[in-house]
Length: 244
Image (cartoon, rainbow, N blue to C red; front, side):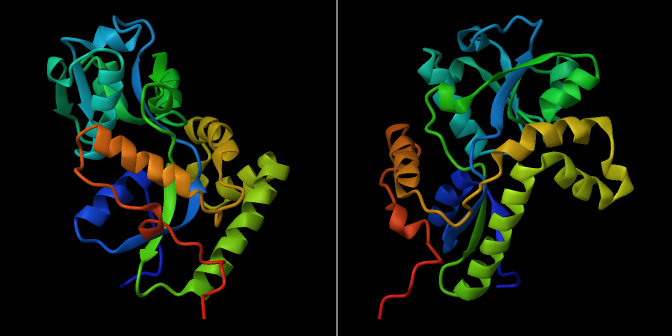
Protein backbone atom coordinates (compact mmCIF):
# COMPACT_ATOMS: atom_id res chain seq x y z
CA UNK A 1 0.00 0.00 0.00
CA UNK A 2 2.99 2.35 -0.16
CA UNK A 3 2.27 3.30 -3.78
CA UNK A 4 -0.91 3.70 -5.81
CA UNK A 5 0.42 2.14 -9.00
CA UNK A 6 3.28 -0.05 -10.15
CA UNK A 7 4.58 -1.00 -13.59
CA UNK A 8 4.71 -4.75 -14.16
CA UNK A 9 4.39 -7.35 -16.91
CA UNK A 10 1.24 -9.21 -17.87
CA UNK A 11 2.85 -12.67 -17.46
CA UNK A 12 4.10 -11.62 -14.01
CA UNK A 13 0.57 -10.64 -13.00
CA UNK A 14 -0.74 -14.12 -13.76
CA UNK A 15 1.91 -15.64 -11.49
CA UNK A 16 1.67 -12.95 -8.79
CA UNK A 17 -2.00 -13.74 -8.23
CA UNK A 18 -1.03 -17.30 -7.41
CA UNK A 19 1.55 -16.06 -4.92
CA UNK A 20 -1.11 -14.27 -2.93
CA UNK A 21 -0.62 -10.76 -4.31
CA UNK A 22 -4.10 -9.29 -4.76
CA UNK A 23 -3.25 -7.13 -7.76
CA UNK A 24 -5.24 -6.07 -10.80
CA UNK A 25 -4.18 -4.73 -14.16
CA UNK A 26 -5.70 -1.25 -14.41
CA UNK A 27 -3.94 0.04 -17.52
CA UNK A 28 -1.46 -0.77 -20.27
CA UNK A 29 1.76 1.07 -21.09
CA UNK A 30 3.25 -1.15 -23.84
CA UNK A 31 0.59 -3.20 -25.61
CA UNK A 32 2.79 -5.65 -27.54
CA UNK A 33 5.46 -8.09 -26.40
CA UNK A 34 8.99 -6.68 -26.27
CA UNK A 35 10.63 -9.79 -24.88
CA UNK A 36 12.27 -12.08 -27.39
CA UNK A 37 14.88 -14.80 -27.66
CA UNK A 38 18.01 -13.30 -29.20
CA UNK A 39 20.83 -15.17 -30.92
CA UNK A 40 23.83 -13.97 -32.88
CA UNK A 41 22.87 -13.47 -36.51
CA UNK A 42 26.12 -15.07 -37.67
CA UNK A 43 26.01 -17.84 -35.07
CA UNK A 44 25.07 -21.51 -35.26
CA UNK A 45 21.42 -20.94 -34.30
CA UNK A 46 19.48 -20.06 -37.43
CA UNK A 47 16.16 -21.48 -36.27
CA UNK A 48 14.67 -22.44 -32.92
CA UNK A 49 15.36 -26.15 -33.44
CA UNK A 50 19.09 -25.37 -33.59
CA UNK A 51 19.03 -24.63 -29.85
CA UNK A 52 18.88 -28.35 -29.07
CA UNK A 53 21.96 -29.26 -27.04
CA UNK A 54 22.96 -25.62 -26.59
CA UNK A 55 22.91 -23.00 -23.81
CA UNK A 56 20.29 -20.29 -23.33
CA UNK A 57 20.59 -17.58 -20.71
CA UNK A 58 17.74 -15.99 -18.81
CA UNK A 59 17.58 -13.00 -16.47
CA UNK A 60 14.48 -13.70 -14.38
CA UNK A 61 13.42 -17.18 -13.31
CA UNK A 62 9.79 -18.15 -13.72
CA UNK A 63 8.25 -16.16 -16.54
CA UNK A 64 11.21 -16.26 -18.91
CA UNK A 65 11.71 -19.98 -18.37
CA UNK A 66 8.01 -20.51 -19.08
CA UNK A 67 8.23 -18.57 -22.34
CA UNK A 68 11.40 -20.37 -23.41
CA UNK A 69 9.96 -23.82 -22.68
CA UNK A 70 6.87 -23.01 -24.75
CA UNK A 71 8.92 -21.68 -27.66
CA UNK A 72 11.17 -24.74 -27.65
CA UNK A 73 8.26 -27.18 -27.42
CA UNK A 74 6.52 -25.37 -30.28
CA UNK A 75 9.56 -26.20 -32.42
CA UNK A 76 9.88 -29.83 -31.42
CA UNK A 77 12.66 -29.34 -28.87
CA UNK A 78 12.29 -30.82 -25.39
CA UNK A 79 13.23 -28.06 -22.89
CA UNK A 80 15.37 -30.60 -21.03
CA UNK A 81 17.60 -30.76 -24.12
CA UNK A 82 18.62 -27.12 -23.65
CA UNK A 83 20.84 -25.95 -20.80
CA UNK A 84 19.21 -22.92 -19.20
CA UNK A 85 21.59 -20.60 -17.35
CA UNK A 86 20.75 -17.68 -15.06
CA UNK A 87 22.92 -14.84 -16.38
CA UNK A 88 21.32 -12.06 -14.34
CA UNK A 89 21.08 -8.82 -16.26
CA UNK A 90 24.24 -9.44 -18.28
CA UNK A 91 22.05 -10.18 -21.29
CA UNK A 92 23.91 -8.79 -24.30
CA UNK A 93 27.44 -9.40 -22.92
CA UNK A 94 26.67 -13.06 -22.19
CA UNK A 95 25.57 -13.58 -25.78
CA UNK A 96 28.28 -11.51 -27.45
CA UNK A 97 31.02 -13.23 -25.43
CA UNK A 98 29.79 -16.70 -26.37
CA UNK A 99 28.90 -17.66 -22.80
CA UNK A 100 25.50 -18.71 -24.14
CA UNK A 101 24.06 -19.42 -27.58
CA UNK A 102 20.88 -17.43 -26.98
CA UNK A 103 19.18 -15.26 -24.38
CA UNK A 104 15.52 -15.08 -23.43
CA UNK A 105 14.29 -11.88 -21.82
CA UNK A 106 16.09 -9.53 -24.17
CA UNK A 107 13.99 -6.59 -25.32
CA UNK A 108 13.74 -6.31 -29.08
CA UNK A 109 13.85 -2.52 -28.83
CA UNK A 110 17.01 -2.42 -26.69
CA UNK A 111 19.35 -5.41 -26.72
CA UNK A 112 19.34 -5.73 -30.52
CA UNK A 113 20.40 -2.09 -30.78
CA UNK A 114 23.00 -2.53 -28.05
CA UNK A 115 24.51 -5.47 -29.90
CA UNK A 116 24.54 -3.62 -33.23
CA UNK A 117 26.37 -0.68 -31.69
CA UNK A 118 28.98 -3.12 -30.36
CA UNK A 119 29.38 -4.61 -33.83
CA UNK A 120 27.36 -7.79 -33.26
CA UNK A 121 24.18 -8.30 -35.26
CA UNK A 122 21.44 -10.19 -33.46
CA UNK A 123 18.35 -12.04 -34.53
CA UNK A 124 15.09 -12.22 -32.59
CA UNK A 125 12.75 -15.15 -32.24
CA UNK A 126 9.42 -13.68 -31.16
CA UNK A 127 7.36 -15.50 -28.49
CA UNK A 128 4.09 -14.49 -30.15
CA UNK A 129 5.29 -16.19 -33.36
CA UNK A 130 6.57 -19.29 -31.56
CA UNK A 131 3.59 -20.66 -29.66
CA UNK A 132 3.02 -18.00 -26.99
CA UNK A 133 -0.19 -15.93 -27.18
CA UNK A 134 0.29 -12.18 -27.60
CA UNK A 135 0.31 -10.27 -24.33
CA UNK A 136 0.78 -6.78 -22.89
CA UNK A 137 4.47 -6.26 -22.12
CA UNK A 138 4.16 -3.43 -19.61
CA UNK A 139 1.05 -2.82 -17.53
CA UNK A 140 -0.02 -0.70 -14.59
CA UNK A 141 -1.15 -2.72 -11.57
CA UNK A 142 -2.89 -1.66 -8.37
CA UNK A 143 -4.11 -3.37 -5.21
CA UNK A 144 -7.58 -4.81 -5.78
CA UNK A 145 -9.11 -3.48 -2.57
CA UNK A 146 -7.14 -0.30 -1.97
CA UNK A 147 -6.99 1.25 -5.44
CA UNK A 148 -8.21 4.81 -5.92
CA UNK A 149 -10.25 4.36 -9.10
CA UNK A 150 -10.78 8.08 -9.69
CA UNK A 151 -7.09 8.86 -9.29
CA UNK A 152 -6.10 6.04 -11.64
CA UNK A 153 -8.75 7.07 -14.16
CA UNK A 154 -7.33 10.59 -14.28
CA UNK A 155 -3.79 9.22 -14.59
CA UNK A 156 -4.77 6.99 -17.51
CA UNK A 157 -6.53 9.84 -19.29
CA UNK A 158 -3.32 11.85 -19.01
CA UNK A 159 -1.36 8.84 -20.27
CA UNK A 160 -3.73 8.52 -23.23
CA UNK A 161 -3.14 12.18 -24.11
CA UNK A 162 0.62 11.66 -23.86
CA UNK A 163 0.46 8.59 -26.12
CA UNK A 164 -1.48 10.59 -28.71
CA UNK A 165 1.12 13.35 -28.60
CA UNK A 166 3.89 10.79 -29.10
CA UNK A 167 2.17 9.20 -32.10
CA UNK A 168 1.42 12.58 -33.63
CA UNK A 169 4.98 13.87 -33.26
CA UNK A 170 7.45 11.19 -32.15
CA UNK A 171 10.49 13.38 -32.87
CA UNK A 172 9.34 16.23 -30.64
CA UNK A 173 8.20 13.77 -27.97
CA UNK A 174 11.60 12.14 -28.09
CA UNK A 175 13.20 15.51 -27.46
CA UNK A 176 11.09 15.87 -24.31
CA UNK A 177 12.41 12.50 -23.14
CA UNK A 178 16.05 13.28 -23.93
CA UNK A 179 15.83 16.72 -22.30
CA UNK A 180 14.95 15.11 -18.97
CA UNK A 181 18.57 14.11 -18.37
CA UNK A 182 21.62 14.83 -20.52
CA UNK A 183 22.86 11.26 -20.01
CA UNK A 184 19.82 9.92 -21.87
CA UNK A 185 20.95 11.42 -25.16
CA UNK A 186 23.12 8.69 -26.65
CA UNK A 187 23.06 6.41 -29.67
CA UNK A 188 21.50 3.47 -27.85
CA UNK A 189 18.58 5.44 -26.44
CA UNK A 190 18.06 7.23 -29.75
CA UNK A 191 17.73 3.89 -31.54
CA UNK A 192 15.63 2.41 -28.75
CA UNK A 193 13.22 5.35 -28.80
CA UNK A 194 12.56 4.82 -32.51
CA UNK A 195 11.74 1.16 -31.84
CA UNK A 196 9.68 1.85 -28.72
CA UNK A 197 7.28 4.71 -29.39
CA UNK A 198 5.07 2.80 -31.89
CA UNK A 199 4.32 0.27 -29.15
CA UNK A 200 2.86 2.64 -26.56
CA UNK A 201 -0.78 1.84 -25.79
CA UNK A 202 -2.94 4.57 -27.29
CA UNK A 203 -5.93 3.40 -25.23
CA UNK A 204 -4.26 2.54 -21.91
CA UNK A 205 -7.49 2.00 -20.00
CA UNK A 206 -9.06 -0.32 -22.60
CA UNK A 207 -9.67 -3.86 -21.37
CA UNK A 208 -9.16 -6.98 -23.50
CA UNK A 209 -10.47 -9.86 -21.39
CA UNK A 210 -9.78 -12.34 -24.16
CA UNK A 211 -6.06 -11.60 -24.12
CA UNK A 212 -5.83 -12.43 -20.42
CA UNK A 213 -8.06 -15.51 -20.73
CA UNK A 214 -5.91 -16.81 -23.58
CA UNK A 215 -2.74 -16.42 -21.55
CA UNK A 216 -4.33 -18.30 -18.65
CA UNK A 217 -5.29 -21.12 -21.01
CA UNK A 218 -1.75 -21.14 -22.41
CA UNK A 219 -0.26 -21.53 -18.93
CA UNK A 220 -2.65 -24.35 -18.09
CA UNK A 221 -1.99 -26.20 -21.35
CA UNK A 222 1.75 -25.73 -20.79
CA UNK A 223 1.46 -27.39 -17.38
CA UNK A 224 2.57 -24.26 -15.53
CA UNK A 225 -0.70 -24.01 -13.58
CA UNK A 226 -3.45 -26.50 -12.82
CA UNK A 227 -6.45 -24.18 -12.99
CA UNK A 228 -7.17 -20.87 -14.67
CA UNK A 229 -8.11 -17.52 -13.19
CA UNK A 230 -10.86 -15.66 -15.08
CA UNK A 231 -9.87 -12.39 -16.67
CA UNK A 232 -12.45 -10.60 -14.55
CA UNK A 233 -10.25 -11.38 -11.53
CA UNK A 234 -7.12 -10.12 -13.28
CA UNK A 235 -8.13 -6.86 -14.94
CA UNK A 236 -10.26 -3.89 -13.94
CA UNK A 237 -11.77 -1.14 -16.05
CA UNK A 238 -11.44 1.85 -13.74
CA UNK A 239 -13.34 4.02 -16.22
CA UNK A 240 -16.51 1.93 -15.90
CA UNK A 241 -19.23 3.28 -13.66
CA UNK A 242 -19.51 1.43 -10.38
CA UNK A 243 -22.58 -0.76 -10.07
CA UNK A 244 -25.16 0.54 -7.59
